[in-house]
Length: 168
Image (cartoon, rainbow, N blue to C red; front, side, top):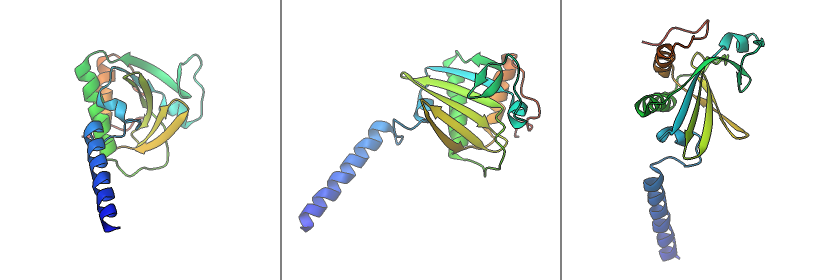
């Protein structure tokens, strides 16, 4: 009986190590996996005040029911990588969330045919992650806000009113 347990334990260790090596520590079905190598990316400026006050904005495009102020296709691979890296770092080092969720940023990322949407409130440190019909809530630090705002400003996109200042 002891030999069978040892063999089973060794098999589990080998399978676990092989899985980690193949997927580099990230579940391929994890909605954050698309950030590892984004093929396409759209960065959005969201009207957080409209969300906050449950107000509709006449004629505005919606991103998961949040009014869009503007958007930019992130064409350059280095810029896609920088935004994806900043968001991953923010998720890996989240701040303590507070109650609000007045999103002012969003990101649509496509990688290998998978598209995942991120509706982000840096103010309360929450992200709603959408893929298909599923939604997952993640926590994030405010640090990525700076690079998101920088890319929106460079593209001439208006930022949402009432946003907290960029973190230092």
